Amino acid sequence: MQILGEKGAGIRAAMLSACVPALIIIAWELGVRSGGLPKSLIAAPSLVVTRAVEMIGDGSLFKHCLVSIERLGIGFVIGVTLGVSLGVLVGTSKTASRLLEPTILTLIPVPPIAWIPLLIILLGIGNSSKIALIAIGSFCTLFINAAYSVRTTDSSLVELGQVVGKSRTEIAWSILIPASVPNILSAARIAMALSWTLLICAEVVASSSGLGWLIWDARNFSRPDDMIVGMATVAILGKSTDFALQTAERAMTRWKMSYRDLKDV
Image 1 (cartoon, one colour):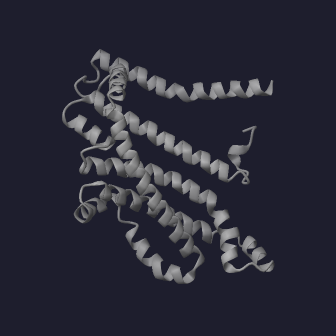
Image 2 (spheres, one colour):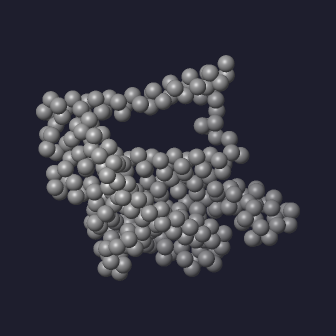
Image 3 (cartoon, rainbow, N blue to C red):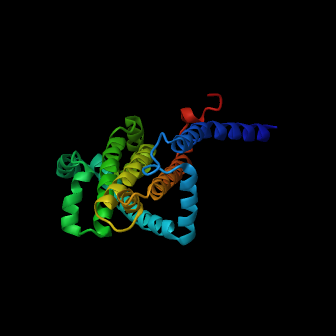
């Protein structure tokens, strides 16, 4: 009975989540068919689905997805690795903080998009400049959150580690970093969302492939169905990457009881 109840709750949750998208799609379809929305600029959902099936069949959509995912994945991993590493270092070492933090905090307020012209000059219009842009955005988000998380760890835990004779390195690895994991993983989700934004911006500015290029090229040559297929694909992939990070977050923080874990809320 409990299993059936959980399945029923899952079905109700799925139906509730589908209400708003369903209403938007219905209104969108009716708007285009009635002429309220210009067919030359906005394709009806039915045409978008048909075009998506065609692009999947000929492999063109997969090609653009593969290019974009490769750029995003490499840039995100580089940015997260550097951001977490330097953030933890700055959070645990006063020397590193004095040496690195002033410079990094001066550069962080510069919007990542503002780096595009300089990156194109230095790295060209190939993959390198796009990967670097995503890495910069991810780095900024993770650096700030990692340093803050380490510094705001419960002092009583650190004092307990000192009482049992742990060294500074052991305290960092066994107390500070594990305590910072939940905030770092939450920041990684924010960094991933930002990475998708930066990826599309970079592909629009200088590219000949990828989902951003597909969207912009379709807009320039009046192919609204292709444009919306590209946008929908970005939304699906973006949701998928966020779900993957959310799953990893829950798996790695099972020890932490939070509001979302309460069954009766």
